[in-house]
Structures are given as structure tokens and as C-alpha cells.
Image 1: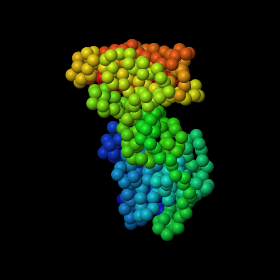
Image 2 (image 1 turned 135 degrees about the horizontal axis):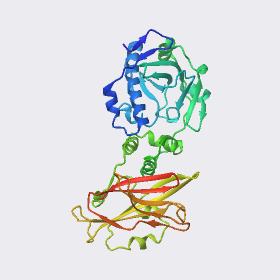
Image 3 (image 1 turned 180 degrees about the horizontal axis):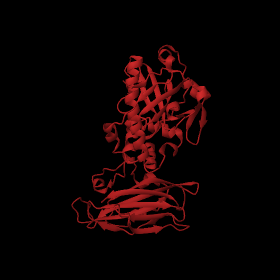
Image 4 (image 1 turned 90 degrees about the vertical axis):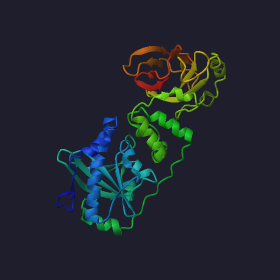
Length: 385
């Protein structure tokens, strides 16, 4: 049984600790995402049992393949019950008097639910209390939208708090779903750029416009790529570049900086150059956003790039993307990944249209880290030569 005691008005479900559920979450490096995922796993097991017992129907998790790639990125536990979709919003706040529904569950067409349930979860007391529910139309028409955290908020007086009628309502009620605007599709290049931008940000769901975030999140492939990249810094393997295999986001400089005629001259400055790629990076500093291009150029000392070569020659450069000069004070640095020790650094002046680190050589398989920093904004990328 999942119900702690008989309370048809506001069901109380048992959520005992589950070691297996916790172990499934341990691979997540982000503590907040790891804890949120664990809570959703506990709640999912309790809710599925309750729905089977009370509604005599098997509730399936949504997305059907595995929702664990959703939970680290956005709050909300979605289940499919018959033809209905139900989203349960968990809160650890004691005596919560409002339901705050993340915009993703309301305004992404494929994600919108029929019903939204408010739940209080108390891990110490090992219980989950369902205390209110509402519909999509009510969330859209009565909910107060808060742009700062992209949520729709309803007070407890706007919710139905008696679950004794929920089972009859969800089977018989003819729901009217509020209209939802379609999200513009993303090209592969756009998706790659957004993933690269969101890898290091603390709150990815608030970093970019909702239309872009919603389109990216609703695509399972890009959602998984984003989550995998956020698990940790997956080193860019320059050895794979020899075979023309490049990680997402790394493109030719001609495609990133087509209006910079002097690039061809700079690219030909060394006879040994064989491979050159760049990627867009974003820095939010001093209430302004700067878009830059990080470029890596690699070659072997004898003019041939081979995995078995003794040493690989590497050059790191930084360019402005949408301006004539770099922001003054931006720093490009080479660090040791394991210790953070700084090996080289260069800072842009007021009129620099690019900066570069002194070229360096290292054996294939050697790790290094490149950092770009402006004020308190920082971008990090790890590499394997």
C-alpha cells in the first residue's frame, strides 16, 4: 500500500527511502539536479501505486522512454493515465499555499497536461501529500505568470482541494485546453549553439528565450546531449579531429566569422597548420552579453598530424563574434585541468580584434583546459591533445 492513512480529501502517500533510486541519481554531478531527480523517483513510485489502487488504471511515466533526462532540468513529474496527462509539481516548502507550475509544462505543446497536481514532499517524515489540483485552462486563464522564474502561480483558493471527486472528474470531465502557440523549430546549427551556451550556466531554463528553450527541451536528442554535457566537462578530443570528427558546435571559422577577411592570412601563418575549428561562447558580464569565438588550431611538429606523433602543436585564439573588437579586459588562459594551475594567460586591451596564447606543444593524450573570463563570467573547455 502507498497510502499512509485514509484521507480521500488530501491523500497522504508513503515515500520511504530507496537506495536503488538514490544510486541511479549518483552519476549527476549537479547537487540540485541530483536531489530533484531523487525526489521525483520516490514520488513517481508512490504515485503510480496510488493511481493503480485508487483509479484501477496503470499510470505510465512520461516521457515514455525515460523521464530522468527531464528532471535534472525542470521541476515536474508527468504521468499518463488513460488518455489524460497529469503533471505533479513537488514542493518541499512547509504549508505551501500556492501551486507554481513551470512554464514548460504549460506552453510547450507536446508537454501540456490535462491536470496539474500540487504535492508537498517531506523526506524526513517519508510522506507525500496531494493537496490540490487544477486544469490547463485554469492555469492559463487564472494563473499569474512570473517572467523572472517562468512559472504560472495559482493560490490554494484557485485549486480543487478535495480529491474525492478527482477520479470521477478525470474520467468524465470534458476538458477545454487553452490554446498553445507552436514553437519555432531549431536548425541543427542553432541547437548546437544553444547546447554549447547552456553547458556551464547555473540555470539553463532561464538563460535563453523561452521559445528557444522549449524547442530544445522538447527534442529528446538535444535534451540528452545537453544533459550529458552538463554531467561534466567532456574533453574535446583533438585526436579525433585528425579523422575530421568534430564535437557538436565546433565549426570552420569561415562559417563563424564570414565578415573577417584577414582570417585567411592569419590561418596561413604557419606551414604546419592542418586543422582549425572554432565555437561560439557567451559571457554575461556587467549586465551585457558578449558573444565570442574560441578557435583551436592544431598541427604536428613535422607538418603531419598523426595520433602516434611525438608532440602536437596547438594554438588558441579568441575573436569577437558580433563586434569589431573584443571586450576590454577579457582574459584567455591555459590551465591544468586537475589542479587549475595557470600556465599561460593573455588579456585583451581596449582595441584588440583578437588575442592568442603563445603556441604550445604537448604529446597526444595530454589534457589541458582553456578558460575565457570577463569580470565574474567564465567559460571553461577541457581538451585532450
